[in-house]
Image (cartoon, rainbow, N blue to C red; front, side, top):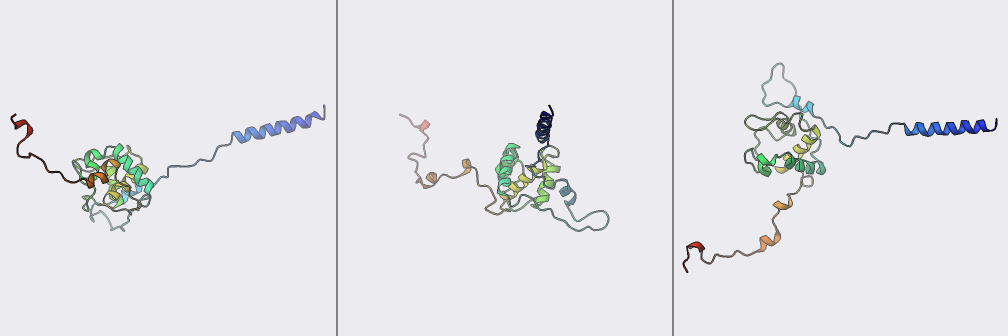
Length: 188
């Protein structure tokens, strides 16, 4: 019986070690990096007027300006959040155009971020606490890419349904046969 006791201790020791390894917490990996969100709102100013002493101008760098994947995710989110419903794929409609060089509230990343989070008078709703900061920064990257503010290798391409087909470009223009009289007005 004395020879079996060390075997039991070893068996119990190995069993306790295996159970201990199984109960260890795994390393947590953050697949969604958290870009600076709220601090950007505190640094955005609409004008040079401010209370108190003058503070130094600080600009916020968008974490996704050089990230092609984030810009393409921003393109996907732009359609999923129905931004294209007002901005008409960036060409303007109900909302202002996003493809031109003139921006009402500025084209800097922090200005676009602030516009999405805070909203703007007469139309742009506030998306504070409705869209995560990471997705807002992806939208910022895509919006900046529409007006050519990002590098060409970062900006996502146009959607396939907006591409011009090469076959359509090569067709010759056909002239109408009887353009003066509509077919319904002809008498047999």
